[in-house]
Amino acid sequence: MVARKYNPRFLSDEEIVASFCVRISEFESIVEMLRDCRENSNPHQVVIGPRGSGKTSLLLRIAAEIRRDASLSSRFFPVVFAEESYEVSTAGEFWLECLSRVAVQVPVREGGLDLGRSYEELRGISDDRSLGERCLGAVLDFADRESKRLVLFVENLNTLFRDITDPDAGWRLRKVLQTEPRIILLGSATRRFDQIDNPDQALYDLFRITSLRSLQTDECATLWRTVSGREARPETIRSLQILTGGNPRLVMIVARFGANLSFRALMSDLLDLVDDHSEYFRSHLETLPAQERRVFLALADLWRPATAREIADRARLETSKCSAQLARLSERAIVEVTGGTERRKQYYLTERMYNIYYLLRRPHGPHSMVESLIRFMESFYSPLEPSPVASALARRVPTFDDEDRGTEAHAVHEELARRIGPNEPAHQELVERSLIERAELELIYGRNESAIEVAGQVLESCLPNSAESRLRAHIIRAKAIIADGGVEGSQPDIKAALTALANVETVPRKHLRALLEFSVHLGARRLRELVEASPSASFLLPLTTALAQEEGLQPRVAREVEEVALDIRVELKTLSVP
Image 1 (cartoon, rainbow, N blue to C red):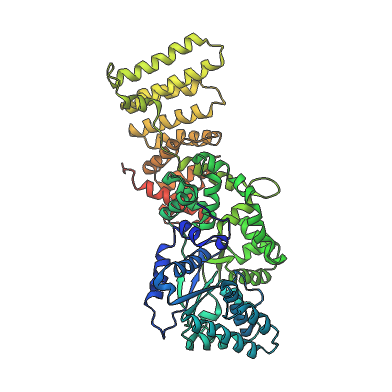
Image 2 (cartoon, rainbow, N blue to C red):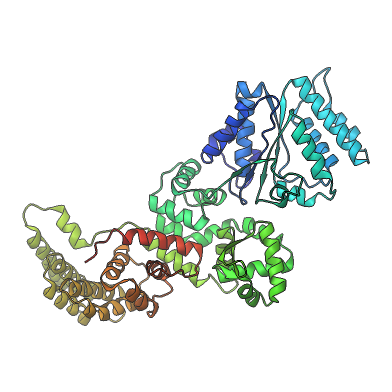
């Protein structure tokens, strides 16, 4: 499948159709509207969504359908404007641009109209009203000759009307769009804007609005499969949805970059992804005026919903100046208001990946909070792998019963340790592994006192730098103590496990699962307090966020952290209450 990084306008109709796999319901709704519209109706529409949300792909897919479908092509002619109509600043120039696009898309026929020549002749007219009337007349003459209604595909209407300098232009366009059945306008915008929202403005109540929401997990999976040609684990897709905010353009970028990577490698190589596409992210930063960029970066640095005062402090600006810049950024849908109160609004960057890009590209190296989140996601969204002992029990070797088989595995480890000798590097590792598997076996069979004793032997024998062994031993002992009815007595081991966790490079999924189980026994508040007081607090921020939310609190954290916390709370509900 062919797919361009950022601009599907370079695709053929066949390629557009082949690559179009999400926004299906919106596509079908608008096409159905065209099929049903009567000759005297004016069903103008505007599609609203942030950059990269699929507006261009949707409009181009509709234009392609008009050209491909016999019923639609017999009634309509699509006129696709350029993505940015920079030369349009008056109503006359709008119709001049329309004539230009028709001329480009219609070949010169022998004995027919030469619209290119008409365009060159009319573009010299200086009076805007005369220019508009003559260009509109030429366009409508073309529609009459083709016996078709023209469907104008105009992108970024909010920017176009912001840049139009003629105060009467909106009303002149409205008159045509209301009274001329040969013209239908399908537009796009990055946000709702004053011209369509304000009853005093010219385009108010003229358009049907279609809003593009973020992609859901199943839609991200469909897009991943279409772009990469591969399936991905649901957990991989969920993590991708979180990191990209469900933005189709960003999902496509990651799908191309990471199609051949494992989940863990994909998460670990996120910095390479940012490097590979830094021009995409940097271009948006560089287009911002200096003071707006300063406010933008201050909000990115905070990486959470923040008030104008908090952003002003970080940007070293007066609050009033900061508020003015936030208003400008909000108007262009770069920043959004999220939470807070009417007098104390909270702001957040609209496109999440820009925030991660900035934090990962800071001069002093990757931002520790982003690294911690990605590391947590690597663990939480990885498969829940059973312990070696549990795997052995599941295999059901016929020559031993369950207990004998675990004992046999323990004996093999001990024999290997004796053969290697106490001075060999692998000796200590084998001893630790043997004891840990024995402790896990005792826990599986409910011999809690023995599990506590063997876990203690692990802690006595393992080397100080054996963080993984210490972590497993403390978790086993805490579980055994809880199973024996000593919830309070488990807390020292849980604290020690949290300390060891900070020194483990790769955290198996089962260890996070154990922490969730501890929260069921200790309560959300108590485990949150233990985690927040531990060296693992930054790594476990999604967990403490979920626990705080379980208590009814609303901590202000990055949306990515909130999304992971949501999944943690879903898993918490699957755990049994003692």
